[in-house]
Length: 491
Image (tube, rainbow, N blue to C red; front, side, top):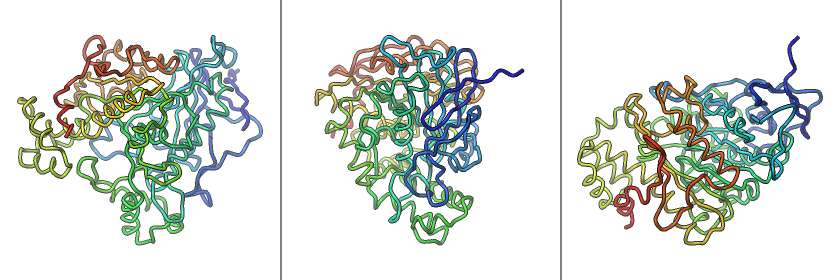
């Protein structure tokens, strides 16, 4: 006789999940109606309640997308699960005879994961994001799917903006209303994400529609950025031109989804954060995102939210090394690209002088990493310090170098350490087989501590610029790392 899985009753209906080693998993749980038919290109609608017990033992459908292009497809697993109900989430929770919510202050801390992928890739079904270790350590872990690409971030005159961001807000609303059924505390929610997920979180921090839905936030390798509607609309118009249809939601809703994905891939294939090109971005739409998130946060938005943020040391190597850019770029091309990216000449001089052994492509990558990520996050930390923000601000840097393909401390490398999933083959594709488990244990524990208490285990941001560094050996707090390079951007 097969033992029945754990069950939980929510306001929407009963769920049956699976149980292993004291952790219950409820997978593929809908938090909004399927965005198809009349709901396509529309704001998410609350899910309809169901009768009986819904099986929740397999990941739900992923948002329509295409795989990463080679060679990244071998490094970044991206499962594709067919189906219309892509607005779903997963919950991992500590479980004895039921949801174990007995803690000194009520329910358990909750962490909500928003995946990255340039707003066109990724899902909550990526094995690296397995929530077991968080639940093992007393956290209720929720991971979320949201609409991607043209269906999530297209800009149309006849549809709401930032649909993918609205999906994330709908999921956080579901968490507020439902997570107590899984033993979580809706007053202790930490939202965390990486890359496009982190950029999304900076927009949520600036959004009045997300106010009060989370108490803490972790921003991994993303920075506050959003485009004006007019500029962001160019990508939608380019896709429309390729499809030979009007750039309206009504017209796009009539296009076969595979054709839509093909056109979207063609249009965005050449885009890059450094040199521009077509890409999907969060937009300043006047409602979800009323103003530029960087400006809003600098002016004190979400000053009451505890914030942990940081980067990897060599973000750029994920894109530059496999594609050969580090070897192809010579001094002349480097200067041209730096000019195009509006990098101050003083900054370029300082980086060249301080890195005499590095190739022009590596110096270009270091400048790109800092321009796009490290400098904006330092600027935000400084703004929160100046404003006397009540909540804590903490910075980290991940510097352990992967031996795989010479990727070094590249973008996305920290994910297996944060989730403590180094033993999975999908994680090892990026880390190799011998990544240090003690480093994962330390980084994962810091994230758990931050979610539980608001303190990851080191001192909050101050004028000495403390950064917890996870590299070779024991994690160490370093004050003002590479300060000459950071100051070179002050022009």
